[in-house]
Image 1 (tube, rainbow, N blue to C red):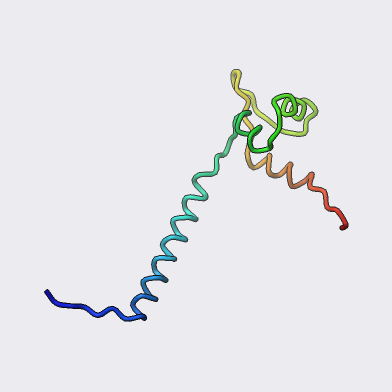
Image 2 (cartoon, rainbow, N blue to C red):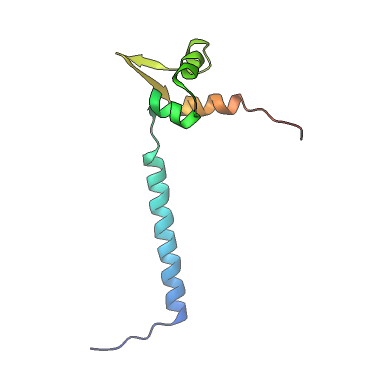
Length: 92
């Protein structure tokens, strides 16, 4: 069985290739794991609000939603847009 010598350059090259592969996998998974629509329970958990608060935000038009049957869906992109538009910048 022939012996191979591994140099530090070989290890650096392996590390670079491995990091590139990991970054590629993470960027692919990050885009596929984001849900397009959230249900009420998921949004309550995300925003850390009660069911009553979520209902109030729907009623007063703060949060856009879609109701299909008895299930309410929220577009994740629209929720993030609302959060960004309502951001308060303090001068401190």
